[in-house]
Length: 465
Image (cartoon, rainbow, N blue to C red):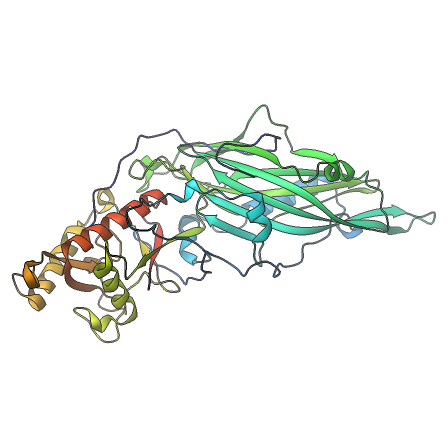
């Protein structure tokens, strides 16, 4: 597939932060890696939908009461856990979450996923085994139901459960357009009470963010006007809010990165979570959501989409084999993914990457192509076209102009020049309609720009009927 020149944007200073303030944010309404396995659903990849949540531990149980210092150390250990180094940088390659982009009808321009931020109502309807749902690479959602236990001590000093409440917590994050900023919101909805409990226990909700890559100097700064340590109210006061959300934003900054391939892009890697602390007459108990990750950068070769992405999420583009703009090219990709023998060289037993559930494609930007493999790949596939369609393959039946199309794209780390003949992975070639080839290349390039796909980022291509 013919690649079009990458679009260059102005460089913006990197930043990110978070805490809770009651203000609605703008944009939110109510080298080449080897890949791992992939999985996902039709809309956005991830675990199964509502009704499959793992049970969330209750806040307030006697076994969980501990001193503040111990709670703080436990939170820091939770934030520091998880992937580091190359595994952190290539997190989306695990295929756990996948954001799906479907092309618009003919004649309409592809809208960027940042134009469709997640809302709280959407969050209430989605989720999975680990509670997370990513609408796209710029919008995340976490939802759970959490029991709150009210403890008391009888005259003999025995601690007992006086009552409990059940609350629903929804937590969303929306990356902001042209900024290295994410706006986060949390809302708590009261669901039920048992044994008519007192509601004077105080619940603190604190949004926490930290640098997750110790090899670089990145910080998540709190806005000075926002309360330190989050927002604390009694359970009754939370209930009286009627589910009104609390909003926060953070500006994270990467000042220094190691001497690596992407030094000029200032890629910063952050972890975030929400900490819940319940304080009653007998002391405090706390817990936090499973931490997740985002990345911010100042790369200048993608469109002015948000500069931060939830980088555990890989991208998937869907193209129709009957779309008149690029039907021949889409059909070629489908043949390559389903039966490589329908293409050339078409070696039995070989296959191509980029199919959901298998190895993803990874984007290759020319400035990082130190071996000039993109040029070598195009030379290689032209020789295949000449061998199978003749030296004059550029002229098809009835004088139709043709081009030599290739899959995977030359602008991927899986291109034809990078094929290792000792593995099952290969490439596919076909001479096809030049306009279809050009339109498909432009469409995929626009998609990768809109989705903020950087060099080394994974993506999939799915061909629909």
